[in-house]
Image (cartoon, rainbow, N blue to C red; front, side, top):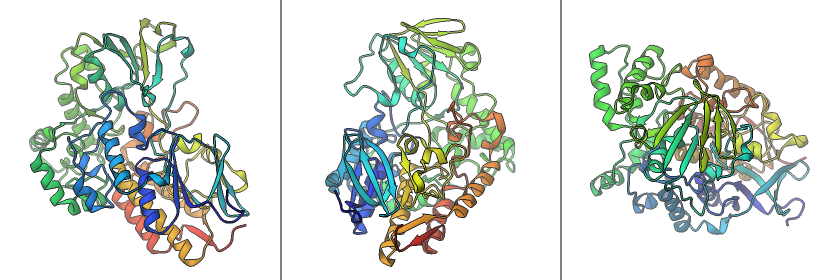
Length: 542
């Protein structure tokens, strides 16, 4: 325990994923004492929790990584374009090992509360075991997609078999060979999980509320030639990520639009780029695909035709067709065999969104309005409370004991997803109203910004940074104005987790900055260069 005014650490972070590791690196580089806690039994964040069959990244491996060390970028070797959860976890162990980060990490430690002491100007962090430590600067590195949403179906406790959220896959493994498996949800997790489980399960039934646009992954091995080309151009790759609207190493904008291109040429370009797969199709075909409603419609029709052309049953193909919302209004998952799995005799789809709503759980499975389905195992692939879930699950109290979750009851407000008014010396990594982009890129940009702010405070003798309420209101208004100009704002057509619409107890809200990740990164740099005008600095606490 520390004295009243001398903290145990300069910086405490919660979460030992990409953000926690980046925080350790940049804090140490600045000469700050830093410690990171995580309730998991391993580092890795997303990749220690999400161990379901088929779990893999949706960003290509060579830029889905931390970039602070040129040596590490050259040393690490990826095996495939989209690495599985265990390869991503191995990469993070490699970073922690090579950079000697383990002394700064405590695992198996759940934080039960975080309280700002206004008199001392310190954050008091309390563990579930009742131990307390203090820091000058408290950083939430808990991730933007980490708090699972557990549905409130009637009778869920009745089911006698294993039933769990996909992000809480049993660590000891799960024998589903020959078993009847029900998967509730049909988003990105199910798109990855279904093809793998269907290979050995007796039968898999997917309960779908909303059909998704799904892009081809086009998985491929990392060849020596491809690896050599990547490693010879890493500076260029990092610069592309830093300057791309989604933080990815893509060659866009491309300087052409659907609106100004002859229809036959549009289709030719689409056909040419479809085999490249993933988000490259979106960002390396036309620049107005996500901004012009008519262009979006043309692209969406092409995607639907291509993605479903291998589904044999026309009735099933219709059920799997996304309807009523724009392409990319929901982040499209990548297809590693999802649609092909529905051609198997041991895979079924139940449309609980339009045809037969799910009524309740039973001892042997679930009941819909049309009948009973019996299972040995039920997996809840029901998504997450994006951007705010982890911070709201942990009682974080700022000035006057204000709970962060209470402040966010109606509007999940922030300044650039980093600062929150009434919460001095609290920093969020990719918090609400930050961009939705390639996460390692955004995480590093956020952590660099946070450490720059702390450096200023240390070097200029400031004890407290108070995020300004007027700056917060301005960022909220700016984010909402940009959101209103996007396809995401098409009223009831878009029921997306990216707006918190998957939460029963909350109204949808603007959670994402849609002005472009590159523009956002520029704004972070402009703020730092101007001395962080969004916050008011004080030399003494109290």
